Length: 362
Ligand SMILES: C[S@@+](CC[C@H](N)C(=O)[O-])C[C@H]1O[C@@H](n2cnc3c(N)ncnc32)[C@H](O)[C@@H]1O
Image 1 (cartoon, rainbow, N blue to C red):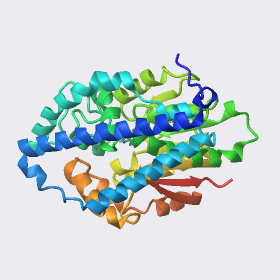
Image 2 (cartoon, rainbow, N blue to C red; image 1 turned 90 degrees about the vertical axis):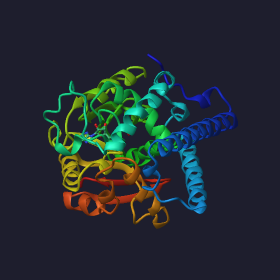
Image 3 (cartoon, rainbow, N blue to C red; image 1 turned 45 degrees about the vertical axis):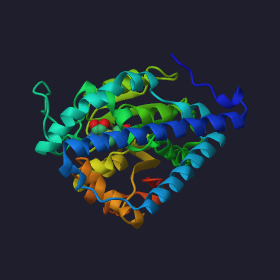
Image 4 (cartoon, helix red, strand yellow; image 1 turned 135 degrees about the horizontal axis):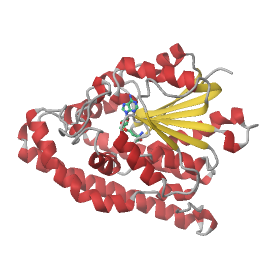
């Protein structure tokens, strides 16, 4: 097992900061170049695709750069303050990235076919579709097999990093400070007794970060995709600490007792759910959290946060297959959280993401 030492113990701070900036810049450049080439190819093969998105004004790109810089600064500062070890800033599934990057290009051929035929519920015949909610059986982002194959799970982290120009992990890490702050209510408990569940854990990126920030806590992950859980299990086995317990489950019907967890997180799930399912997941989070327990949700920014970025929010579901995104961008999650019984609501924005923190009353 690979350990995650705190780099600050060995390397002077300016050097680590320089390395972090270089790391982020290289991921940004990689994502930018990849998207530039793939967009040009897509628009050449399927010229009608180009008309589906609104061109973005240069000021939007400038504003995005400013927000991205602020996100990276916050990421750096939170590590400096010990919310998580600096080594987490550099955590990346490198071997998978190199191994599966050619597959991302090969998969584009299949994506073009689906785009051309506007097929977004197409799955390999060998994939068992029984038992999943209907809203889930989609080729989200036009990706091959939706969330239901090992290849989809192998490509996912790489695709998300490209989509967000290397900022996906920095966005995910923004849940750690409010989570740890909320868990202060249980400061009298030994750290090993703290239980945190990540709903829709996917390939386990957030669980890796939770392990870094809460090295002794009992971690749990739930997701509907058996393939993504297999991948999560593989990637989480590489790091030190107890292996999180992973379970295949719908976030709307969690297989846990009432009042069980001290903390619950969910990252990039809500925009992929219809409105009723969003409320069900929030209600379930409330049920399984202990009194005093804290919920932290991370997802896309919404219309109310950044009117300037509205063209980007319009483009996202027009280019990628994201059937619930438009409704999500105007959904009032604060109201949903309050309806479920949560209190102490806090809302933050970082870069193109949004965070809700709420507690179950003691
Ligand atoms: C966009 S991915 C986010 C994954 C991960 N949280 C991350 O940060 O990358 C959405 C995930 O939600 C899962 N999912 C979607 N609907 C779900 C539901 N109702 N219950 C549990 N998991 C669900 C999918 O299988 C997928 O792994």
